[in-house]
Amino acid sequence: MTPIVHHVTHPLVQHKLTLMRQKDRSTNSFRRLLHELSMLMAYEVTREMPTSMIEIETPLATMRSPVIDGKKTVFVAVMRAGDGFLDGMLEVVPGARVGHIGLYRDPKTLVAVEYYFKMPQDMHERDAIVLDPMLATGNSAVAAVERLKETRPKSIRFVCLLAAPEGLRNFQAHHPDVPVYTAAIDERLDEHGYILPGLGDAGDRIFGTK
Ligand SMILES: O=P(O)(O)OC[C@H]1O[C@H](OP(=O)(O)OP(=O)(O)O)[C@H](O)[C@@H]1O
Ligand SMILES: O=c1cc[nH]c(=O)[nH]1
Ligand SMILES: [Mg+2]
Image (cartoon, rainbow, N blue to C red; front, top):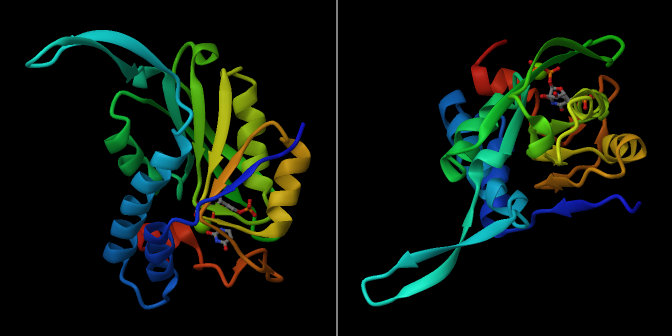
């Protein structure tokens, strides 16, 4: 299976990401930009969403026209930073269900440690879209998708803002069947596993911790 990475190069996405990377940006502004970016990323990741035809009446005629069944989509936020993606995605697909996976990265070993897992019922009928702004070593993304696969969703996609080449390789080695949507592929990881040039610690910047 050929692993797929969708690099979203739309100028609006790139512009907003540049603003988010700036170190002096306020928490408020960072969060606002993430919200806007999540709506733009939602547009990309739902591009192949299945539609069905319904009959409707326009003021002039009846016609058959396509609709989506938003309830079949589940957004899976990887806490905490993935929560920052949720509101914007739900604005675009308001009927979607939401799952949460709580993971933190052990700062010494960089291993992902799970502390929470909650998914909607009937996952086998749903298309899952996993949300986490950062794919650094890839350990969190690999663990999140591994755990999610236990629930047997119909399909899985992974959305982030920044990915490191090392993390993409790790993810694709474990989950070649899961396409990744990212706004940037950065240079490399630093000695603490942070993405360079990156944007720092996404969770801390979204929630104003630290
Ligand atoms: O690819 P990795 O090396 O695993 O790093 C990426 C993970 O690190 C961040 O979470 P963090 O552990 O900081 O938790 P937080 O969202 O609660 O801050 C980020 O949101 C990812 O989940
Ligand atoms: O650069 C990084 C790496 C992991 N987690 C983050 O929030 N940022
Ligand atoms: Mg963090």
